[in-house]
Image (cartoon, rainbow over the protein chains, first blue to last red):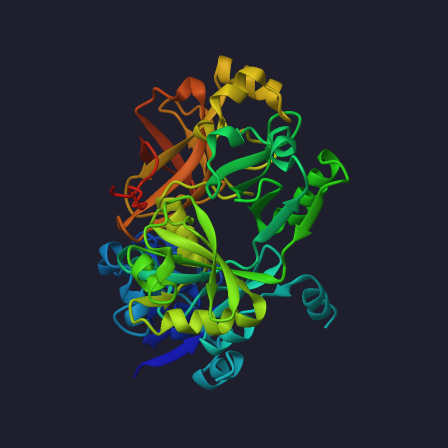
Length: 123
Length: 376
């Protein structure tokens, strides 16, 4: 079963077992506007929860992506290299950024569920 | 709460503020004014629409200044490196206010009007106050400096601008690039200036504040015309290689370094009889120590303002002053200063988040200008 969690910095993580898929929320995508470049982490590198792991550049500015959980990068979304605008088109699915092997599932307790996140963005 | 109050005190609204909100604009504060960064279509769509059709930008934050008095042109020539004898009545000239060291206080448009006792200036919003001070310090008190904040300013930019404007004011057919005229529209007067900041043909139109919303709506009745925000204005001017004050030019840069030598009247360089003239003459003769160039970083990562520039031996040779993504070319583009001694280097390196990105040096503009040329 897949569960989805959110950070206050507008990342999401879909968790299935010890694997997580990370992306940015539709709200973040809309705030950033047209995305023109994504810098993704290398496979095999480990990040701590809350550390900057990727950069998304919109026409306006560069924004850092903070890892929702600690763990090792196991895959990145290669399609984004040539077509970063996929994130704007489908931020919750096709626009995913990277997959992570979650080191400690306790990390997820620091994140928000959908209801709390929607409250944060005032939906 | 106190922050909010501060904001309300310092950030002004243009007469189009309510209209922008109605049109779902995303507003930001810029140069002391709330202005749209973009509307619903987004920056890239607004940018592309301007290049292919026509867009309206609210540029009412800019300062429109009328100066009146006998011999005003002679007085302005003591301040600016231009010659009114080479500017016909009704023509507009791009120029800069310089300080005593030949550095740029602001860049501006000056209109020679059909009245020999009057000139018209359009200056940057954030520089209005220091420009007025500069004018007061250097013009005697007989001249009347009139800030025309009774007028809004909208820019209509893009290849279909003339057709769109002709539907409202047929009288302006064939008006030359870099010229202006007052015309009647309905029961009021508007100033139409054929110029802009996008590299396209277009107009800046001064409209009385109380009429500017209805005038804008009238232009928007034409399906070729859409609204565009500051985001598109910035990417358009960057593609056109046009300097933005506070970024590519400022009190640390001279017009010679910034590639604006063309805007200085040649005769005035020798006589050097304007503010900053001695420095400009000297720099013109010796050559500047740094120059503004265009850069094409390899790959897709934009190299933004503040990015450091290195040569192939890892020597620091300069800094990016404007950089972003070019919607027209679909690649990142940057402008920046490099030391004149490094000008022959074929390739330079931009430090983007610790990675040295090889970049080609290119001449500006990145996208050719598409200004109106009169066919006789």
